[in-house]
Length: 299
Image 1 (cartoon, rainbow, N blue to C red):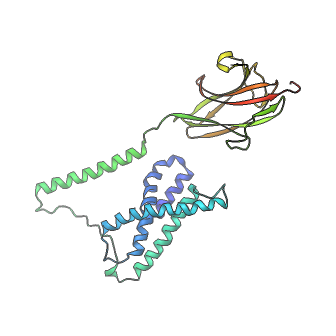
Image 2 (cartoon, rainbow, N blue to C red; image 1 turned 90 degrees about the vertical axis):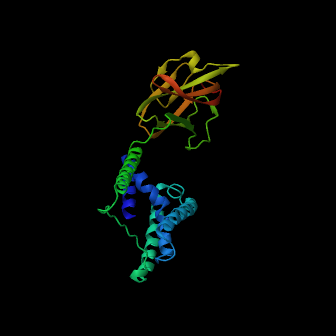
Image 3 (cartoon, rainbow, N blue to C red; image 1 turned 120 degrees about the vertical axis):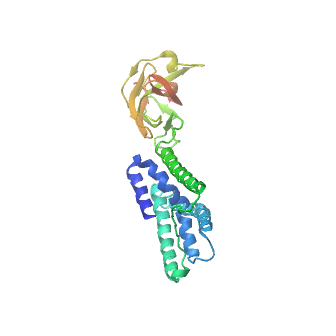
């Protein structure tokens, strides 16, 4: 159990060790809590055999782990940024439970006589000389099947199947939440939004973010795809419907970046602020905000 926790900590420090998280994380969550609980409740040899203990351990773990998560959920109110259900809170909590209940199990087991203590005995013996050829063949087949199963499991863990390839593109308000978007401005008034890009393409991608204030004139909107305005690669600037601005951003697979964008609009009007994410020179994702800009001194 201690070795499993150390390997899980290595995964946190070195994300490239993802297979270790699967190999040691699953029993850590779905078996160890129940096993130590069963060991503490039934330290004696009588009562439960090994198969019953294993089955009960899985069942109790499935019940105990969510209860630990439920308790951790209430800690969120004390410190929303650091507590709650997070990897660095769940791992120590389960580890503490396993260690404390495990110590209790050891104490109860050592209080019994040696002949009354539960123990796991593994008897590995080779076929005797008088074993029939059929028994020997079945033994060999069984060993080969076990080795093949373990090898297949390792292969599946080390080379996981790729999921869907996609990129998440979103816009947040100035507070970093999906609220408080600039909807009503005056000419030259500064506003801020945050653009987020999350890469799930299973490779590093260089995107281009394009911002264009499409002016609405009656029932017609001068959208980017229609007018094809010139693009200037600059950021945090005054916007005009006569041009678009852009910047490149390189994002690794699994990485998420949030880019603040400060802007103002130079002329009054009703604008569809187009936020475009280009990949390989083509529009890949698009968002927009409607902004009403009132009159004032044009810039």
